[in-house]
Amino acid sequence: MKRVKLIMTLGIVALTALVVGAILMVRSDALHLRVFPVTAADETVATRHTDQTPTLNGQNRLLYVQPLAPADAALQQSTKQGLSYAKVGYDDIQAAEIAGQKPDHATLLIADPDIVTYEDAVIDFVEAGGSAVFMQRLEEISPRLQQLLGLTAVGGVRRVTGIKFDEPIYPGYPNASVEDSSAFAHRAADVKLAASATTLISASSRPILVENQTAGGQVQYWNTGFLNDRLARGLFVQSVGRLFPVAVTSQAGIQVMHIDDFPAPVPDTTTTVADASGKAMTVADFYAHRWWPDMLRLGRKYDLKYTGALIGTYDNDVSGSDAEMYGAMRRTGQKYVRELNKVGGEVSLHGFNHQPLLLAKDPVDQKLNYTPWPDQASMAAGLDQVAELMATLAPARAITTYVPPSNLTSKTGLAAVRQVFPKVDTVAALYYGDAVQSRYVTEFGENQDDPQLFDFPRNVSGYAFTTNNRYEIADVAATFGVMAHFIHPDDVFDLARSNNANWEELAESFDQQLDFVKKTYPMITPMTQNHATAVLKQYFAGAVDVRYSDTQIELYARHMPDNASVTVRLKDGKLATGSFQDRTVRELGARLYSVTPKRAALTLAIEKG
Image 1 (cartoon, rainbow, N blue to C red):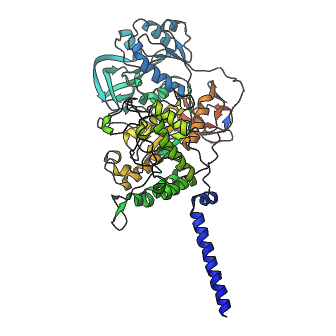
Image 2: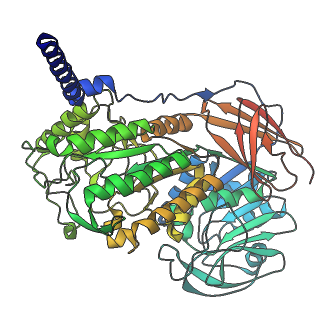
């Protein structure tokens, strides 16, 4: 009997030892990653392509009149870039060439503020059936030109603020009042409109975009210098389309959601956020029990694919010496990296710490109190440690995106990133703002200094669904169907970023913002930054050939990504909406449609109505 008990006891001890050993082994990083590997999702880019030739002849022509005034380079650059993003072709012509152009399906784009030397050619072109867009406020307006613009009087110029859409241009644009109009300032003349003219956009009751129907053609007049700013690109691209019988612009269809400073070391300091019992929560508890569950809930609701920007330590040391980051990141880093992966997300690089990769010689706002790095070698030494950390947290995942801390970086910094993370091909910083004091503000596309890098800036930030956020979302969506958004886990603790709102208010506002995007721009697909870069590269490499008649539209995709779509604007008639074998057509507004082709060659019937 004693022997049986002994055997049973030994058996229990052995079994317990096996269980404990198994638990310890599973908890060990190596085995844990073997049992529960963090693997990349399939992010290949399918394309549509046809070599089929058009059967219709109708084709729009935009004729960009090269300005005589070199000071208008900013206006040229911004408007041309908007057209390029939307895959709307144009031809550069000289003012002297206007008289020789055929006006059928043609529109002149005029950047000069003074066209005295060629205004007769412009007026004759429009009266013969063409169209013209005056892209900034004119300095001199003769009686004949005033009549062409649809103005009965032109008065003094003054600064006006805000923006009001008197006629719909594209879905989602908000009216901005004087109070929230810091980004919308114009110098506009006091003009009175003829009966043939319509105010499309105004500011402080002054028309800033006027459209006039003449006996022969149409004219749009921007009574402002707003088109110099990339904030107006979407408005420009979509408003020009009103002048043609059929206008088609391309949409990349991309939504990216960045979480900066995540994963990162999480402090145990107490916050002002209380738990259910009223007890103040630590930052770690807030992240784990309030913020992250809400982010997962919203991610599931809107199918978001989060890109989290990993940071190793909040130590401000810039010598590149070893930092103890693994102990602080082992538990939270592994948890959040794994859960990002489970919801289809990924990890990008934010930095060794939150000190931007700048040298002492690089300009920076001293109020930010950042410490410069001594050299590229020190930067690389710090980044090497982040690479080791990432290899431990998710060895099967390669970091492909760099998000500069505070959106500040330098050529030296980017070289250090590429040295340590050779698979990084994307830099995600800012789309709006001024590229001063090392602020990394870029266009979308190939990096100007390193062709191995692709710039994919973010155009909106924060949880709060503000007027400015809504406008910034709408304008890039109107330009070419892209939305790149960034938030921080600790925004609620920052009075400026939270606008003094609590987490419940921020989460609700963020939900409203995401709901707005999903309902207003159903052609936009959530994806990781890595996937978005691949899709946008293919979008830029592709083309859409458009032809039309009074009754049909032909669309031919040339190496376009599958998720890309087009926006179709009709002056007359309508398209059948719904999901069909070869396309999905959604109505965005009056005679405005989103068309997602399901094959490379597509013909759309223009119905009466």
